Image 1 (cartoon, rainbow, N blue to C red):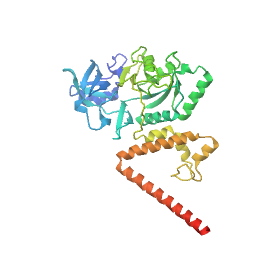
Image 2: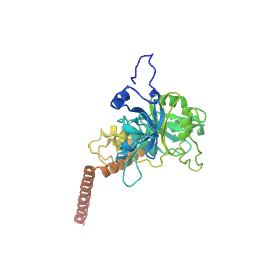
Image 3: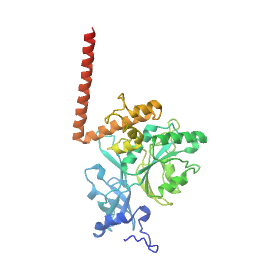
Image 4: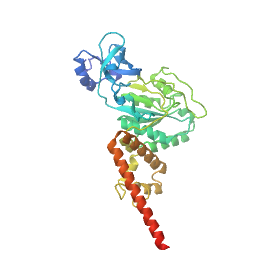
Length: 371
């Protein structure tokens, strides 16, 4: 299964699904055991569909199901499966991931949930059928940056905004909340922007994420050139949709690249996404380097470059509020799984409480002396 760069060499049967020389090298120990390489295209109920050079096979994941939910087999994983046998076969090993898109679950156990693996581009679908929720977009972006993938924001249903000036303003608003991220206005209805998105998706593996009703399935069908994904209309009252897609599916695109379509996400919790949050709010972190105090909270401290930028209008106050909220949330989720950090947070709370009590005592003392 050597991947030759010679023009006369035939491409590897899994090349269309992202197989390359690096995956070839990672798989070589399993190839020596006679196992078959394949990419997981769907997972459900402890079994998965794996596309191999011999076609798509059904495989059981019982031998590679750890207690850690972040290490379970996921759509987008590369695996080593039995070369033949009954149905289902068995996944014998999962290759190390290059990237992983993870969010926290809504359960009280504070577990992480992996949504897609080995992703190059995280395509965040945002519908223009309803008012833009910039804070939600920033949340998706933080997870995307943290995953190791390159985020792209796609404003879907652009045909619902016929005025070009209004559409340009909406794109600009999102660009302000997504520094360094391409923002595309796309309409699956009339094809606007699809050529650019197709070119992006052709460059590897893309995962399509967004809330219910964002038009992900319609967008997936447009990229695939056929109606593969089921589509349902969103409610007119709030633009929300039902979960048309109920599993994560990996599909090869006709123009090159592969696409992972995901169910709509109503809850988008952060999971150890500190660097991702920093990337989303890079302008705030750059401003913070100019603050007088290295531990500046950007509230009322003298010499704060961040609050000065807000006063001059260079930085929207909404951005700072969103930045603080995501940092607090991320700190809470990390603290639940990190005893050392929990102790540091409690120590910081006690320190701030002592400072506050001392300030109140000093104030009361000053008032009594004046009396």
